[in-house]
Amino acid sequence: MPLHQGRQKPDERPASVNPFYGEANPVSGMTEAPPKHRLPDGPLPPTTALQLVHDELMLDGNSRLNLATFVTTWMEPQAGVLMAECRDKNMIDKDEYPRTAELERRCVAMLADLWNAPDPSAAVGCSTTGSSEACMLAGMALKRRWAQRNADRYPGARPNLVMGVNVQVCWEKFCNFWEVEARQIPMEGDRFHLDPEAAAELCDENTIGVVGILGSTFDGSYEPIEELCAALDRLQERTGLDIPVHVDGASGAMVAPFIDEDLIWDFRLPRVSSINTSGHKYGLVYPGVGWALWRTAAELPEELVFRVNYLGGDMPTFALNFSRPGAQVVAQYYTFLRLGRAGYRAVQQTTRDVARALAERVDCLGDFRLITRGDELPVFAFTTTPEVTAYDVFDVSRRMRESGWLLPAYTFPENREDLSVLRVVCRNGFTSDLADLFIEDLTRLLPELRRQPHPLTQDKGAETSFHH
Image (cartoon, rainbow, N blue to C red; front, side, top):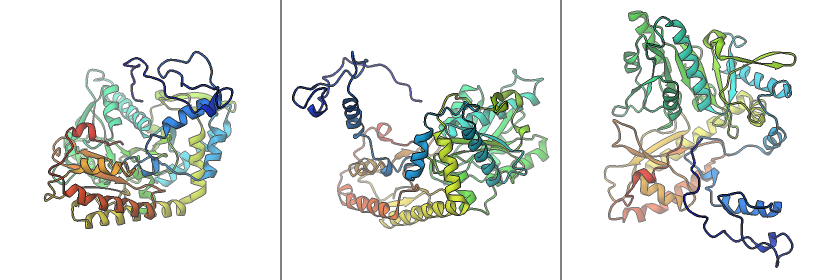
């Protein structure tokens, strides 16, 4: 969660309230809003409180036009009905809400089968609030397994985790919070993610694991998980080091099984010990739900597992959070039931088709160069061509916001800081019609941008709107 400070200045003049929402009548009701940074002295009528909050939220961006986020912004009304029925159910109370717990268990079983666990009945997993928590749990399991194998040296030896510099920030948080050295492979040239051989070279006896990303948030590309496992196999042959792989499939783990069926990245690779995904991304559920699965119970150390009473017996649980609503888990089961494999395949293929077609249309404008084309994740990144000197990607992002589009512009990390791009995330609900409107607005802007004397963005750090 973001950290917020208290008010930094005295309360400004309160905003006025529509007299129709006053306590008594349209002419003698309340005419000023309550203070913003302290609790009001007394209650408000529900209609007044609703208007105050509703009116301020109108200034938020339109989530459907947010091309920065991977998070689901549309679900069927029927899913909304189920979520409303379950938002008051605490997911942690397994014995009070046994059917919600059962739906969670079924989702884990479905994912174990989807990700080709050798024995789906032996795989273990749990729901989380999202991929960030799932990654933390997977990292904890990796560290604890390493510590058990190195009990004679730990805590004296410092564990490390190998990953590409393109990982989601939650992995950097994990290494910081759990005192693990982050060993990151830099980008190089047109390689924007992990290199398998470079990852193997960074491993040693203190490596708890290697993280492979099935769908980089920087450009939408898959990391080569199969090649990574092969490189670690060769490392083990040379040195005896047996390094497990965790696949961060926040997005791709709910795309590849349906439209990249020949891609080998999951539990079919013996070195893959755990996988996570975001149910609230391409799992097609509103935020926030994620999933973490381990190949077998042996990959999840028993001492990390807590047990709660469930129908008179014990149910093992593994989580960082405690209380959270059951609504998203129920919505995930609804979506699995509603779509099945064929439905997911149709949705994800349509989304990829939209992404690829839109990428080609951007490329045809002539001012831009594609970094990726939307043919892995339904995501593509592009930058301006060398000939374009009047404007940059940050100018494009700012001007597209005037039409309601939230189009992120950002600079790539160390070793490719020379590259600044725009990124388009296509999700279910971003239709071909919306893609048409996007390209029309972008095309309409170009003549004005080309007439600029130079790029206008002064503080690119402030302008950057890159969100995972």
